[in-house]
Image 1 (tube, rainbow, N blue to C red):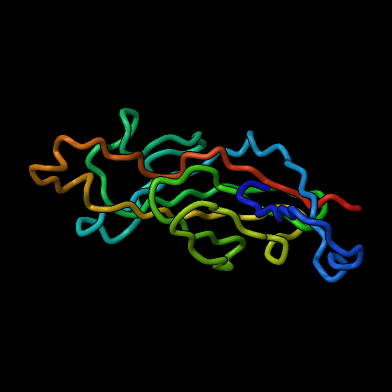
Image 2: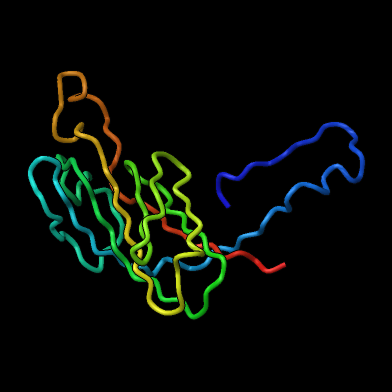
Length: 171
């Protein structure tokens, strides 16, 4: 998994000192490249409901050339994940321009404000169709610029990916 910790020991240690420590779980990446997304926007202070702007879309920067450079608000990404069987699953959103909140099958799994944008989704997925919903919020810097920020490079907004699924390897 990305963003994992490693323990380095530089001295001899007794054989049984690591017995009480949890064993590292091994995760295997599943193919999630075929996920397509419905993308909807809710402009802060201007709209009260999401408006769908893309269906069956890949991921891109909402505030980039392909999108809306002055957009500030909430971006909603929806996709369906079909599973033949249920096991321990992890979802990593990759790069995100803003904060991200994940909902799987109607269950809110919380928000991440910085990397890693990773969740254990094992308890919320089921066999068959699963609705994955990600809401990303950016800041007002894209819409409201003062003298200093007019000349700054502003980072991209939205779900940029690549989105990856991980399954726990059976030992």
